[in-house]
Amino acid sequence: MVTSHEKRAQAPTGISAGTSRLGRDAGHADRSARWWSRNPCSRRWHLRCGPGHRRHLFSIVDSAGTRGPVTVIADQWGIPHIYADSVNDAFMVLGYLHARDRLFQMVMQSRLASGRLSEIIGPAAVTSDKFYRTIGLRRSAELTHQWYLEHRSDPIVDNALSIVEAEVEGVNAFIDSMTSAVTPIEFKLLGLRPEPWTELDVFVWAKMMTWGLSGNFRDLYRQYIRAALDNDTLYRELFNDTMPFTVPIVPEQTNLSLAEFPLAPGGAPAPAIQSGLRQSKVAECDVPFTRLQSLLDRLQQVMSPFGPGEIVGSNNWVVSGNKSATGHPILANDPHLVLQAPSLWYEAHIVVPGELDVMGVTFPGLPGVVLGHTAHAAWGFTNVGADVLDIVVEKVNPDNSSQYEYNGQWKDFEIVDEQIRLRDGTIVPFSVKWSVHGPLIDSFVTEYGVDESSAENIAMMWTGNGVTHEVLSLSLMNKMNTIEDYHRAVYWWDSPPQNIVFADDQANIAIMVAGRFPIRSGYSGEFPVQLLNDTVGWVSNIPFAHNPRSVNPS
Image (cartoon, rainbow, N blue to C red; front, side, top):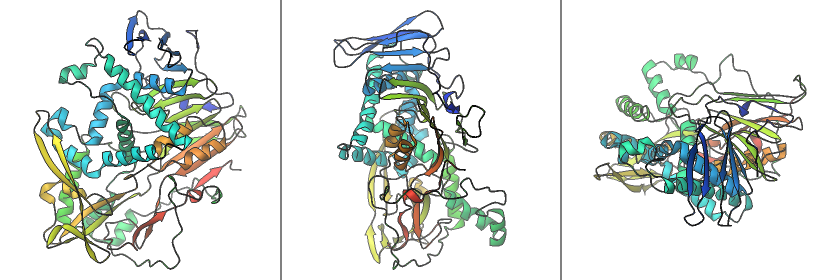
């Protein structure tokens, strides 16, 4: 247990970690003197306040005997440094602190991604709720959570799920202890009592970040611009695949062995395309211009007030110790995410002797450091911006709008019946159609449903739909000490695609492009397309060992 008020986290020896200081208000923790103790009878944490604004010692004690002592020090910037005897205790306290400082932010994030804002805001949020229920973030989070439960016999999966459970327990410990004196003002103004936090809320928030960094409708915008220009030559000059000023980051590919990583993330086979597979060219399928304009207008309306906004210009870089004045590597990370209040980030330092020593920024409600460093290694992210979402125009049965053509037959859409509850209890019924490619994104705009003239609907095929493993990958990154640990952690990162830089105190530096990248058969993915059978579309994912990377470049 740490007993000194003055103990501070230091950057790991041998690394100048640019991620360790992202701004003095990044943690945004309370700076007053506070300490907690746990009541052994009620098993709740109680908050007491004292005077002063210096660094202070937080003491969280479990007298019931099932958990060890935990000490939290808030430094001069209000950033918590958590010292625990077990990983679960440490992440439980992180969850408690997340809730203490950011509970309303967490609730709004989860409600937005789940399509439940109307329960707080009322009718003004119905269109937003329809949109997020249509793209299915909560559905995908449920599938992801189920995957973790089914694969818990694997120690690394069990570890990841255990810290999720600990985070949730900590959040609920704060919610259970909320008296009027400590209830966040937003809940008082709205007359709202927060629901118990769940593991699903964690995965929903992870999916929302995945959507914010990889979900888009560029295929529709490209078609719209090309149609407006009505000049393919001019379009290509203005929107070329590569620009003259583009400089490759990884000029030479450095592959890991396919024998070492033979499977795609999650253990699903990623076979090479069979040589005899028919790869017929699929014709682009333009959405009628007036309908396209109406759909884009509505998408803009629903995404602008609540969506991630414009994200540009992130950067990360790493310098070899051979090039630095100290002889040690330097890693810097500057993620340009949308500005919001409170901040998207929450800085923290977590120490479990012999198991964990990690510092950096977290997402409130999500366990673990997203960008940061351990005692021996540092890492950082920027967005790849890869095209991992395609627009598929489904050919609907003109005699039965509940069916679409696939493999020469009329196939039933999967119908998901939703109920949107308003603040006053009113229920707004809503149905979402799913094809084999994904949800029909025009179904959330009732007046722009099936195009009667063409009998078509627009589906969204996105790598973020279904099971993804970013929580598992982050749990491994939080324990990285060597470049081998880095390879194992990055392997599991599948969505959203990220450029992940690395440095350690053994003078290793690296960058890897991590993510799930579809192999398309018969088309480029640049414009909307019609995929009428299983020989065209996404036939596999690019094997992990083929993703661009550079390790200790000369």
